[in-house]
Length: 155
Image (cartoon, rainbow, N blue to C red; front, side, top):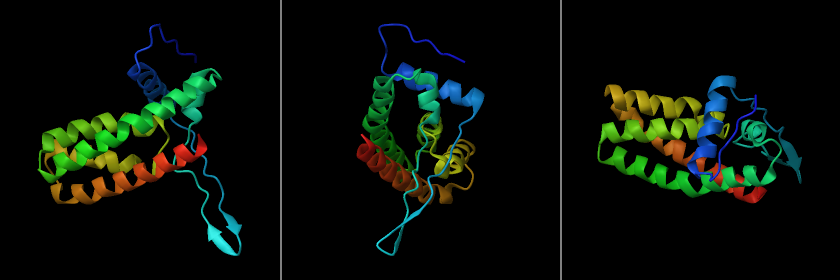
């Protein structure tokens, strides 16, 4: 399925289109096998899978780089807002931010926090298991930080 973007391109629009594509197709996430280096076990597993971004890019490498750049630019601020809202127990805001991050995390194929972000959103919105949210937010932040580092290394 091809997706079209009209010009001028709104910077958030490509990520939204990518997210919609993922929601309808699901993401194909293949882990990169671990390797040995100097006798040490080194994990080379990517925390992300850009196959969905690539599938909607139509082979346009500039589009892929733009999506990675948008992720690197916008997600840390969202994570910071999530931490702040969680710390101040603003559960309504936590739910909104988690909902927003959910589609971005899915579009970038970050499977390891797929369930965590959903748990944060559901718990905050339903005001249940609130004591678990800070640890989940910490895990999401950690994985996002590592993912951003991997993406920067790839660029």
